[in-house]
Length: 314
Picture 1 (cartoon, rainbow, N blue to C red):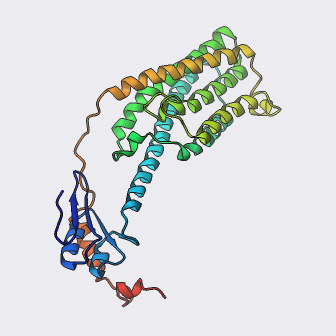
Picture 2 (cartoon, rainbow, N blue to C red):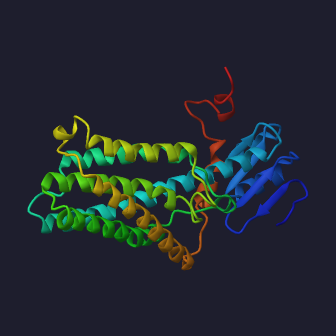
């Protein structure tokens, strides 16, 4: 880190930030702001400094930047939760559906049932935006990593398929289910496992004991699973192609879900214990061309109106 005489100029490992919030020296400020990835100025700075900056603070307080960074990291962390859930569960479900379609003389699930399953599942995931984020995820920036997402999908997707196959075996070998019973059983099991897995995937810690989900995430997830069960015994069940299942099925399903969550926790420990190898070092996203455009912006006229007059209040 280096501190200039007329302002402050930080060189980070990955991002350079130019700040002119204390003094209004145009020459020093303009040079620092243009060399930075993100130029920051304040309302009381010189016109040159404000034109060169990407962000103009209305008050001389960097707390708003810290709050914005923390909120951005929280939003990104919750977004990644949904991506990891969606890719892993969809991979597992499609693998199970393909295998069942090849082996069974009937469709393992009707198109309308798949749509209903997805609608209920996605409804439960709307609450992820309100979820709590572990403090460790707010201490450092995260990055979009396709290799990490692919590795996660290939690790946890097959675990989901394993319990789908166990459900298939129970329905066909133990309960001697027909087509309607089979579809109903897989609908309930698929919805329960892919919805409740949010409690394990949302954190690297032990869920509930060391990292608690938000109240809304817990309520929506449990409610959606309950709705999925009620649909199969409601008056709409026949219209949707469902039929009531024996109580023994739900007893075994409860055991499957518990074992599934425990197995995912074990796999999660092994998954995060393996170090990640980045394909390349992070690089600046804004280069020389961006700085040239930013320098030229204050001299750009639109319909003969200079920038300063164009942004003036009317």
